[in-house]
Length: 432
Ligand code: HEM
Image (cartoon, rainbow, N blue to C red; front, side, top):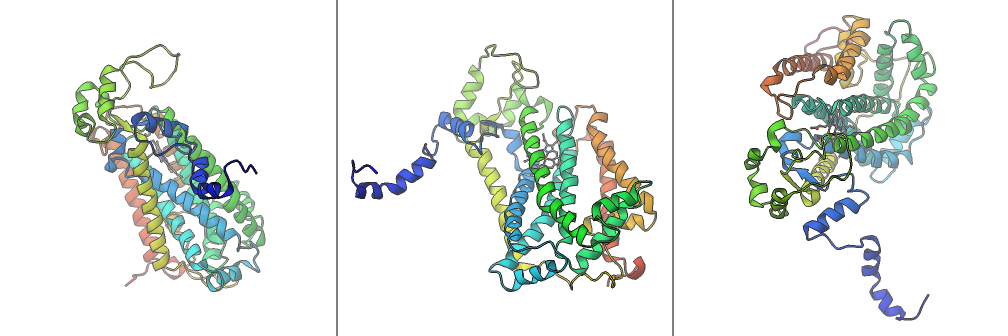
């Protein structure tokens, strides 16, 4: 250690020097600095330096994608902490759950947060899918990102379903028994698929370890990878969808904030837009870099986009925390393969399927869900229109919107029937 400046001054300057060694620049106060911060920061640089003002209108995305990602972050953090206590063994799993509530500081809170964030993620990812559908945002050039999204939705369901078994209580055991028996209704390969999932003919130790590995490693890794592709594609597809005519000069009046420079950083931008010139920097395919087609109704991502994202993240953490403090995650008696509850019900998001299975095992469990997922995957390649893209419930897409809504309502009704109106032997009952 050099004694050049003396130990005492070094100690006094330590906090400031430590801070500066991490954050080399002060908070940006000019447009140039804002751009540079967005561009140079490891975590921020996946964002564009400027964002279209339309994408920031709260009613357009409702922040659902960011909320889905926030829930994934909360689940990863709480899940990693839970892994310090959990043991995937049929002898220990249930006791470990009890220990977590009884002896581990904040153990109950941790488990509750993980449970409610998981249910929240299934719901929010689904709502995000609906937002993308109802605004026609799956259409070209975003077809592939929609397909990535569909895979993310299936993986989210998979993550929740595999986690369901881990507490090894009656609810978990029988929900998974019912859920995996639905897979066995597939013709020819059904039994093999079920065996592959369970590693046995019944739900037991082999199933527990398979579900555990899928839940803590395989599925989170796959989600992380696909989320990275998803975000990267948003950039490559030219940002979020918006109505086609929005970037025309006459549409600029629709963004008085941008024109009046009310939002910080906009006044110089409006000037830039007028004075913009283009040089031939390279030959690039895609919607960007075409002279005259570059959106000018943009604001700096720092602070506008980042504040909005931070707000969504904080809201998600708050809601999960409050839910975890107020509502206890269920833990029933230890799994008992000899005493099936009557009726045994699948997790709520599969209750629509279970209800359909009670009418036809093949069509309810396999046929209709497969057709539905295939239809979702093919949708952007069949709907090649442009009119109405970027607008909620556009009248140009009335047929697609009505069909999708009908399917949603049917699924919702089936879930409600399965949850509240089915009793022993799956007979219809009145809940009140
Ligand atoms: C883990 C699940 C997911 C995460 C974390 C995620 C995240 C995001 C984010 C942050 C955005 C940009 C802002 C927004 O729209 O809120 C976005 C856009 C998009 N997402 Fe997702 N998403 C997920 C699942 C899905 C699903 C299930 C679909 C559809 C099947 C989908 C399709 C799309 C499309 C097409 C866009 C571009 C929308 C546009 O241009 O307006 N995503 N996603």
